[in-house]
Image (tube, helix red, strand yellow):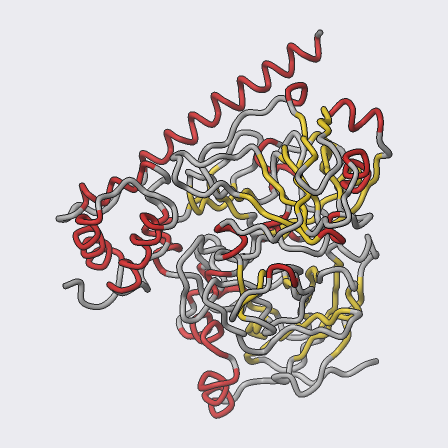
Length: 100
Length: 421
């Protein structure tokens, strides 16, 4: 019984702690630029630190492929009509080469 | 007393070295003195190519609950790397062990609520085991084994490839305690057509359309005496962040097969075809020396399976100064997929001659193996220290990167400059 109580307590602590990790990701702020709003759709599935982590070596084709992978493979709920704007934002702010 | 040839670099040899032999990592490390103020989690200071600029700028130290501060790659799903100082012991502490999750739906599983279901179309029956039943009804075994993310050192790839940009610390070595998967499978009974065992953890995607993280193993690997369902790590209950209450341990194989929060094993007669097996975690066919997972062969690729031989020098950094006459301490760890480490050698003359380091205690063929060698110094100047491990099956580390698009199997030897002054 005692073990069970401690187990429940530990469970609750881990849960609360996971919440605080979630709060940390609010400190990850993407650069303010046109296209940021649409890019923020990414937070449906993951923290946006994945974006600066992958700066700055992807060109427009590379970022476009990443966004399409998220939609086509991982089922990201992002309209296909937003891909161009998101890829342009990512290339301009976190990529290399021309964004247009 | 044994004499070691020491390379002291004149301007000509330095130019030659920077032009070709040493590669980008040494160039970055040596070029600007940057290594003296080595960035958090940077790999240039270790004599390897540097991780991407964006990664260096974004990552920080952050302590998950129950962990020491680790190098944050991403918060959600949580991906955290072990800083190099924790690799100065052959066993990696639980609270410093790296954290890697694919999907953000990570439940808080209590030990008393945990159960593993074993069944599938090629099993005679479905059996469910609670943690208490595993501990009570089956023989417990212990094994020391390296858990290394397939993408460890992805950030060092040149050209860079997209993904979690790991440095050198997406790995750890621990003593795992649990029960053999084959003992559990025997309770379910195997049909003659059994081909693979499909593994699933409690981790789930946050949206329905994302493929659940499901892996499979060849039947013979699932039945191997070293493949265990572990509930203890270094004598403590398996931490939540490392897949507690119980995870699969597949010694020699990369971490992708070490299913965390392991709740389902299905014996099947056909190759598992989901995204994580058929598309992700693949390398070009026959490019690497590793176990072949033949039922998963595709064209022109195959799944990553076992680890390649590798080592990590943890005692010196590029740009470090050593007083002339004092030895350069070369210490670190080496590992492979289970043949065991035969030798670790060090060169200070750009690979012309190699000197064997002394190996530490043998903790088992799947474990980190410590090595140490003191290199005497005679003249002042820059010295390039190279280190390479060779396994008992004769595999050795590569001089140049063997590229693959997903960023796996980086085992390029380190080239560390120290300044003898």
